[in-house]
Image 1 (cartoon, protein in one colour):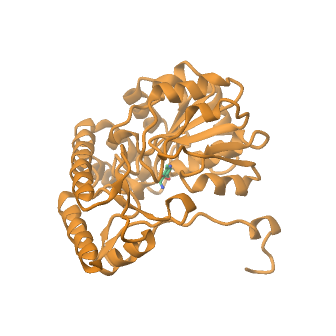
Image 2 (cartoon, protein in one colour):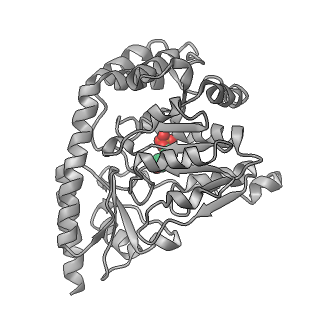
Amino acid sequence: MSRFLDIGVASLVPYVPGEQPKDAGYIKLNTNESPYPPSPSVIAAVKAESEKLRLYSDPETSDLTAAIAEFYGVGQKNVIAGNGSDEILAFIFKAFFGEKGAACPDVSYGFYPVFCSLFGIKYNPVPLDENFMIDASAYADVTDNVVIANPNAQTGIYLPLDKVEEIARSRPDRLVVVDEAYVDFGGETAVPLTKKYNNLIVVQTFSKSRQLAGGRVGFAVADESLINDIKTVKYSFNPYNVGRLGIAAGCAAMKDREYFDACRSKIIATRGRVAYELAKLGFTVLPSKANFLLIRHGDVGGEEMYRALKQRGVLVRHLKDERIKDFVRVTIGTDDEMDVFLKKTAEILGELK
Ligand code: PMP
């Protein structure tokens, strides 16, 4: 720490992203990326756009918001795009949460409390129930704004849409942000509900189901007045927040519905098979509608499992949160990758005997 560091920043505990090893030898199942490449139309669009990199990108990201609006059947004025959904979430926390505080599931995306400390927002963790499910009724008396990930981060468990609606409807005077980073792997989006509830914001990303984690593209859909408020933060921070390559990639990915459907179907099928095999090996597997599984085995701790797999060339994620420290989180890769993961896992369990 330098002697110049702002005292408010010195006390921050920043978010720790999953490892991104330079060594390509690992089977990488630790940061919920897609194991499949971007669609060929995305690669062509990025190549064509790269000739225009001399020029700033469109600050309104019009082509991208138009493609998103068309896909979801909402108005273009109901959409804002960002440099990954992390940036969109940051804009939202900054725009709306100062006086309200943020109520979030106690096990969820680790960035929510980090945004709270960055922006001086009160963080109010609301416990998941004993089955790691979000209890919608627990939010009925909460006056803070609400942020939930659905499916929830780390657990992968999906909260049915009528419960999301219940949270939005119960208190129109607070905002409800639904972070749908993983919704395309078996959940149903709350985007249509944004037409009915002007206190609801849905956030999504291109990082998981549209194979663009490195492209850094995310977006939010909400009532126009909320989108305009988010834009006030964006234009006070970084007007050209999405680069030309991100816009081009995002547009092409949104338009290639066939490729999107093919990739997510493969991941859903692989997830089902791997969950079944893991249960046979004696794992507790939380019921996931995301592109990852949170798993626990009575014979081996979470950290131990993570290390043993890493030693064998498979990277998974171990999260230190108290309630899930006995688990590891495993991203769904290709079938071949998952076969190696299953084989190494069985090997590790075998060695314990
Ligand atoms: N929300 C959740 C629940 C996530 O797991 C992630 C990925 N780490 C994000 C948002 C951020 O995704 P990105 O910034 O890549 O769009």
